[in-house]
Image (tube, rainbow, N blue to C red; front, side):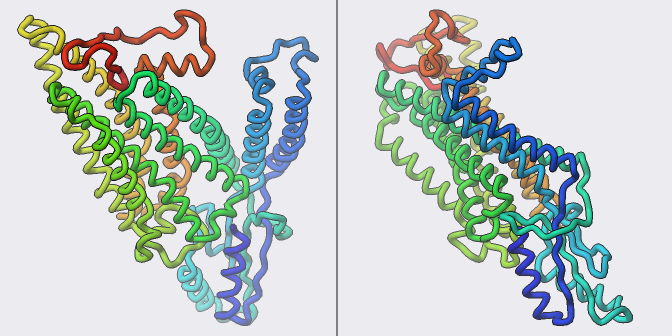
Length: 487
């Protein structure tokens, strides 16, 4: 990535300042990180070889093999891929400093380590003009030295600065976490999808369709995590093209929008089940369900790909730093936040407050024995399902909220510098939500939990215990009616 940026800067500067001599040098990491990368490259090959041949290194030391090693022997292909990608991720993070330092006559004029991003061409030209006006009394031949880490064997000899140890450790930590998410999110959501699909075949109905849709959206986030991990391994090669960067952003935002809209549909479904118990079976038909999902994904694709649909939302001075506000204009983020997330969260809060008040009234009526127990317990089942949705909603707000709020602050505040946290920590936190959702449904839905246990070969009787009493209802639901999702 930095090689391409360097060549672009060199071309423009050479045309504007023919007398300038431009030199590029490699920004090497500290020796400890080079040694760690060398060790990992050898250790990775040895570990993969042991997994393939089935040799147990722990037996040589008289130790019992841990469960993760036994899992690797049972899943050799997946284990070798995980070791390879995880090791490559750490190696590249150790060798890549992410620096792009610019000096004029050995005087630093720009530091990516300090600013968090590359300068635009207009900024760089303005900096050079100002510096050269102050140095007109110096030699006519001025030297511009750009220092960076260049991938694919295009490194330049030499180095100037060294990154700080704490900052480098943070980068390695991000690499490890991102790689783990790319390995955990897709399998977790695939298990939920398979479990829900089996439930739908066993108990015909549409109660679990929205949960299936939510797991699909989270699965897409996991696929994008794999893309992000590959981008880290290749040291940002995917960031060279603005169109490809915008496509990555769009593919990340689309399932995120789909998740919040799916939560809205689930809450609306539970709200109708509580407030209209007699009409609910009539409303819950296949055609409205399919139509709502089609509209949901059409809206998600449209709003997620707005910068690609409308070029006016794209930034013209893209420098190869693939961030939301470096490839797209702030109007795009305003549209996402105040056109999708803010209204959806407001409607969700109103629905939960309304259902909460109904639950309180029904609870008081049960205590005083003023109503039949059967219908009230039927509503209690939907209250429990909506409680699970509320937990998922709180998780979504906690994980994606900081990223959206931080992006809005960055878009509104030109002097703020949140590029690093937005691209690394906060975005990583948002992606973690796609791993939390399957765990929530595995813990709070008895049917999903039992089917997940069967998929994971947990066949011991009584190993999977329900967290709450399963109350079957009577009346309009009839015998054999599937219980509400999350109950």
